[in-house]
Length: 250
View 1 (tube, one colour):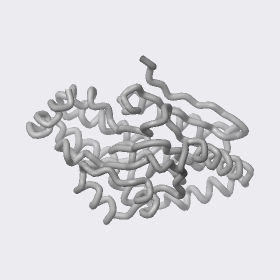
View 2 (spheres, one colour):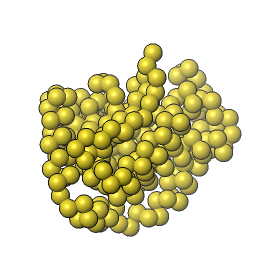
View 3 (cartoon, one colour):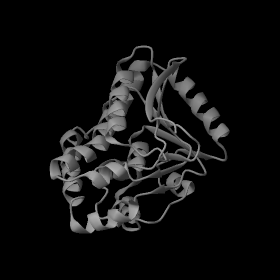
View 4 (tube, helix red, strand yellow):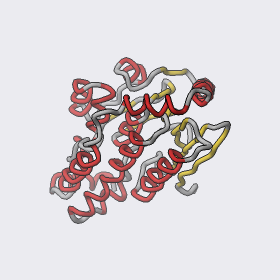
């Protein structure tokens, strides 16, 4: 079985950050921490002008939090730390001084939708359907709500949260502003991502940094907000309802 990883590769002033986990790119705490650190690292490298966030494999972009780790949580502090993983990555992405393009080749679920929404620009394939499933397992999308609502609107966030077991198509995600464009194949997606990244890398880096600041203005309070939201989820995961529901996923 392939081992989980997070890696950074620099090509032509483009920093390609790739993460992988054999369980449909689910993200355990250690991978989330590595992803956070890699985003910070790429943000300060002069050799990088623009960042592409991608995942390994060709079926799922990110299945969200690791259920194996979720099931093992046995106290509120561990729960808070677990859910803080996605909070810290989202905050690292919005504070990164480089523009981040998300390359979404497949399905995104829960926290995976949060990662996509935290990018500055997203390109996807027609297979990249999305689902916010947290409510169906007894918790809720508290950590990702601010960034998904910012990108797609509160009405869409509410719709997807309540219809927690429904996958929404890539075209739906495009119509609601999550994806800028949707392609028929991974090859076409990769060509478009490369072309856009190369174009952006040729622009004035100071202008790119300043426009990113504009994109994310008035979100500074998220540093605290997302950790507070992680604490809510960390308590809910200990509830009898959630524990019983999670047993089905063992």
